[in-house]
Image (cartoon, rainbow, N blue to C red):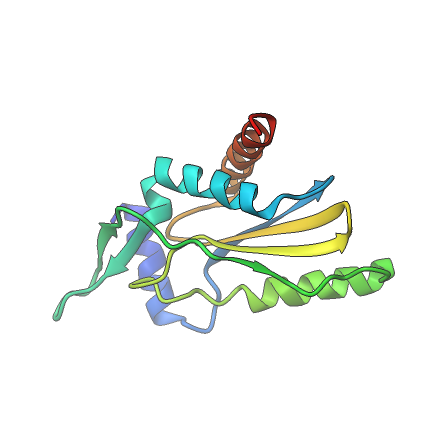
Length: 159
């Protein structure tokens, strides 16, 4: 682990009630092609080892080892549509989704990247990305969002 990851790991162990997750919400406008998005995400995950990394502790170990998986089984959750909701209801729903996704999955077996789509209207969706803080920070999420956008646009254009 890097020094920053060691520090975060220690914080997670000493304060398990505090979520240590990096999240972002992206607004996607236009007809969202979920399978094309999944393909784009899989390409991005394949390019970045940290998105395929699990953290495993062997017996008697205090700090885990990073184990990079060859492949990851990406699943995209599609939530209930939030059509016809006013702004206050939308904000509350998004906050609820963020809170629900703030629980760090098992870092030993789960893919680190969690993806959820929230339909707002037929041509408008929110894309929520969640990663453990061991894998990402705000800058990482900005770069990841940009790369996902470029890869998705390239895949849509090639169809």
